[in-house]
Length: 596
Image (cartoon, rainbow, N blue to C red; front, side):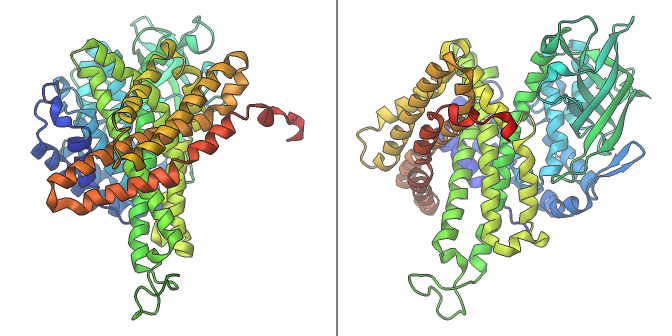
């Protein structure tokens, strides 16, 4: 049985003490964000996730979704849990109040999202896709489209999807064949097939609003000719009344390695009525609004499952008895010591814990800047925050999911053979975590996006938004002996990141293969430095709190110990990553294709 308790204390510590969110009460959406309100939101969210969603996780995995003649039935308990979810107002937490949302900062919604994913990743995919649809329509839709679709999407009465992939093309969307024929009434007739569509069909909502990429005949070739369309399952008549069934059907659902409670659908469009979202041939701009939000959310999936794996493994390690501590029996009155006494079990648990707490801080820092990029009154601040989010989005998506998968495997390893057995729930976490490295752009694509687009964009402007605060922090604490164990490793690793960046800039200009071969190692290097930066900030804050909060010393002392572990055991990997990526592309590309 999986163990999960929402890390509410950690959320509060990062928000109030590390990020000092209370300083931003003058900003839109932050005005009413008092500590008591945040605590109430987190406590209620934790209660829902722990009591409603977690108990359904294993049973939903075993039961899966059922496909019956074009209709999809979600696992037992999902409909009741979803009704509780929408009644609690969780669907519109960070959405525009004009359309029924609560207008809270996205960083708060992100914390609730992590809780949901930790408790039941499959369930979280249904409202998660709706949130992305809301983002796209809110940013690119006409006033009529916003009025028609946003209130019911935000309330959870309707669901949303995004339809990109086709049977013959995945990432290379310029090859898509789905067509959108203009009609005399300003609608479009959509025909084609989309695959791997999360929540494409289900029984949780009365309507599903599909956002579909398609090509208008006569448009530019490739990706420049792609447009985005709103294609509802049921057409909407006056107000929000549902009309006739649209020409979209679920052809089948996929039988997958994991997230079995999430419906992954093949969607067939036959003369379906679609409504242009944004301008013709500008579909990717609108879709990227949804995709970027989804990529950040997928990154959190890696963290979320790692948290559940850690808590489950730690609980098991304190109970399971096997052998004696090498330094002498710790519990001589028992037949054996608990396995948590063994250094290798501690190594795995500490690695998971250090990743989880550092990654959570990084995700919340980026989430805060995602809010700043839209609500801050200063134009320069909005631009700076937008640049930082753009730079770190592929890092969060790829690094969090890559290491998250390593972490759930370590969690299973702590269980030994029992972890391979279904009843412990650990093998489900491994299966569920694996998809996050693949969808919303496979992690190799994220690495290429980082080195090929984000680094050179605007003459390195985005990179400066990350490099400058790291450098300033290092300079600020250069003479602080108490911080030296944390700042010195960060400074060395930051220097390696700077070397790697310069190498990619120089080599990639003359040979794109050099940059491409280095991309994945470079992304991981940046991810480690980013976590190192957050751990240094966490430790700085924890040291201050030790002098102020005598009632919670254990919590802050644990931060110092875990931060030290990260700096000494995990951050040094930046050295090998630098060596690997600067070895060049020759060792990657030398073998003739026929030899594989």
